[in-house]
Image (cartoon, rainbow, N blue to C red; front, side):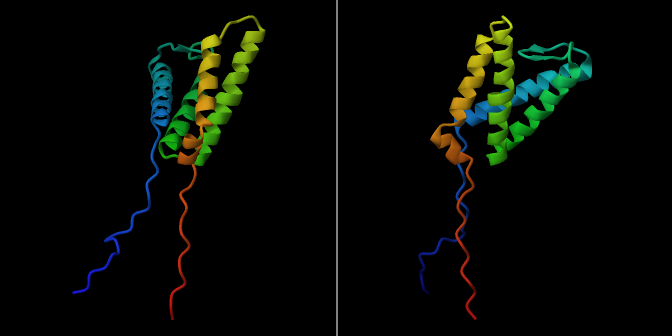
Length: 142
């Protein structure tokens, strides 16, 4: 009986999900759950830049985007990384800067968006969102 050094089954190498990404997913899900619960059951949620009472349509859009981004982040999809960068880095950061220019003091919100953007730009986090290299298949021997 010949013994081979071949592994019994070849499994693609799994990408490791960074802890910060898990935390972001949980935060996105909590935000979406709070907003959706308030919208569905008539409650009120006041989050920075999001109010289910004064602007329920925008709140519903925020909840939907948060759910989609949480799903993509959990699956380590590159589009989700890009989406969070746009959503937090462009949209919310811009809204916070506009609020600051109007005399408000959204320091915590600004800090939160900046921390997310800087965290997602860490090289180990970016690597987690890259597609794993798939080796080229050898041509079948005739």
